Image (cartoon, rainbow, N blue to C red):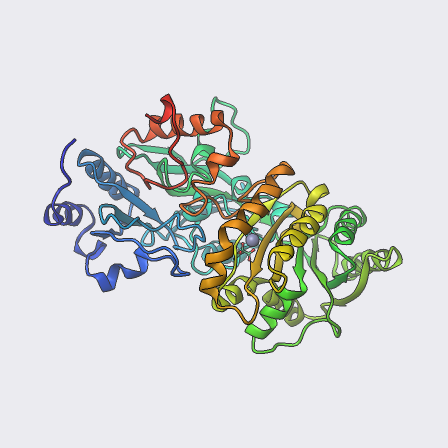
Length: 484
Ligand code: 2HG
Ligand code: ZN
């Protein structure tokens, strides 16, 4: 094994490729690249490199490969799992895609948009909007997260029910491989059965197989009407019944169906400066329903009313506030979107991001809640998220009078093991949309089969034989030939 190049040699080589302006070395400049935004994962890096073209990324990778330098790719650094920051060995160069932020093409006949990886999600959505189209991925961090990161983590969010995950929204991709070769397939084809669909290897790989540098994204028609309601429901089981009715009665117009528990609403309203609840009374469970369609506003509102009346008639719905203006819609969504930040600010959340089949979600919530409360009865059951996808953020929060550190030290592991175990037992996932990063890496040993883990390592070794790209992320060490 060759020894790592000195800091000087590395810096000069990188400056030759990306210029002095493309390299950050001072601790004050690299700090935000080596720390995740919640300040939970903190690593070290000799250098942050910011290439401005695919060709530069390719040269950076080729040099690092030849000199055995590990590389951590980074988009908007909004991962919740520590997947985008280096470890504390201080050996890995961070490659930030932030300078590659150009929209290269918008084709409104093909309904596609070609972008560089560093375009933020909000910029991509705005570009689609300016062209009379919709780019439907919708997540709270849209102002910071980048398309490359969205692809690398197969981002989900609040419109998956209607439009799918990021994987469903990409037609073409460009990737720089660990050794610097470029796999470029920036094609806007909806049909292409010419062998393995290689782009999907890189979607959701969290930067362990290659660095995504560009993509061709699908554009959708803009809906003509939107109708939103904040609805109190009898129980999670009632919410599932309501979801089924809403989908049937609207002919598939349900875009979002987000569950919110009472402690989640309490927390976010407090965080928003004691904002008023959309509903006059406190309820144990609520859902935020959004319908969108090509029909006119009146007819969509009539459909929403029909759904709510059916829900009331069946005893599923207890009360509802229907948005009557854009300001209402924005406020209802603000309440939903800010729950995550409210948790970060409060501290002491046990983050579980599980999914199970929608038919099992109510039962899962009931059992997991009872089991957690049996351990620590004053825990605030902050449960919310994408119920229409069978995915909830099941995030028990410390009791009000308990400090975050001692609560997490005592309960993080037992509670997340319990919740993940229950999801797994329901044929579910222990990470529905937030990925694996470093946070859940070792848990995979328990929840993936030996065959799955071996296949993951075989793919990793085929593309990254020196294990230089985002090392220590996603793949747990396993025994056996594949990992040796
Ligand atoms: C959301 O749906 C995000 O708000 C974040 O996926 C969830 O912080 C979380 O647990
Ligand atoms: Zn989410």
